[in-house]
Length: 67
Figure 1 (cartoon, rainbow, N blue to C red):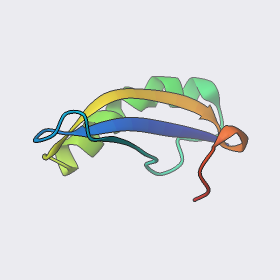
Figure 2 (tube, helix red, strand yellow):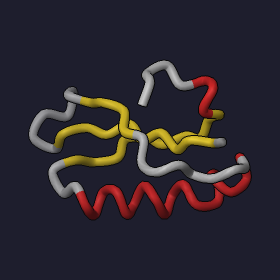
Figure 3 (cartoon, rainbow, N blue to C red):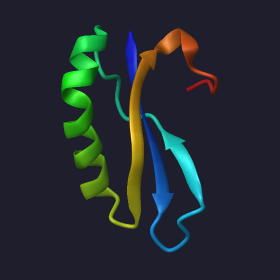
């Protein structure tokens, strides 16, 4: 399983950033890479107080923080 990880920052405090894991991005890295930007935009539209600073795809096994 591949996860999409968003680094998001508060608009009111740009240095206050955190990681968000939207729903699983899919089974393949290619699928995550092709859909990641769209999912990042969807997340940003649902959370207007934040900006997406970056996004990346990685295998779930590499996750540092448990769900």
